[in-house]
Image 1: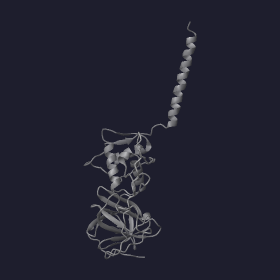
Image 2: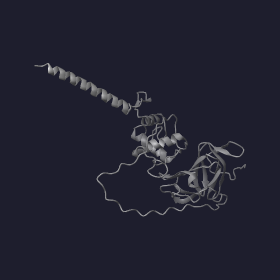
Image 3: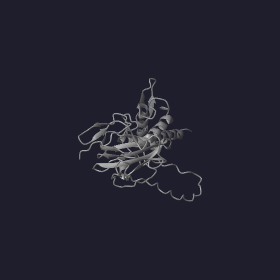
Image 4: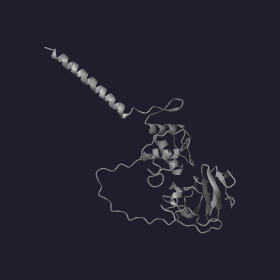
Length: 316
């Protein structure tokens, strides 16, 4: 059914959208909208949006199938939503910035509502691990601040009695490093399979993890490049002396960062010449080849020992 934008979005960072068809629009750049006195940044990579409606205290968006958008609050406001768990692919609060990633998980369009709260986030953008609606149905439009299902924070569990400490501490679990080759620049707002592989490699090192729990943590990596991924890339760049605060490329997947990530993914080595060009060597020999080399050396040693024994027999 053909729809049009019902409310003109104010405080807009033009251009918000470019028309992709008669009944939908395609987001091409990050945009800023004002809802309930708070500024929210809405971004997505070719996200197909059928309509966006901005009300006094909330806004609703209708996403076409497979579309993904990210809603961020730089002031860290809690972002209440009626979206079900299947429609929330990112829910994080990092460095005082709340980011909620929403997607159309089914084969049909879905209408989702987001309401910024006066409370600030802690741990997640919604301050909850669950949602108030499981089917992604709208929670009451945005025309006049209509009814929106607010999220009730989960009741904290009673902490268990600490166990008697042992002599050694358990090593934190890390995710497996995928065999992957990065070929293009990635940055905040990117949505692709490259981002998920990037998060898996970053999570394989405790010093560069995207998150220690929840969305973005080991085993729960996503395809969205948000603030947590950017912070993890910055830690990776500082650790490997690639870039630091104030330098070009800090927080993005540039040539040197890609080369180091490809080295880790392949098991090879990285080198930089006098001109600053970075190259990745071939992977190290497999364990099977190393075993063959050791066996050959052992056979050569046994042969030499046998020759010496024969010579000693002739000595009177």
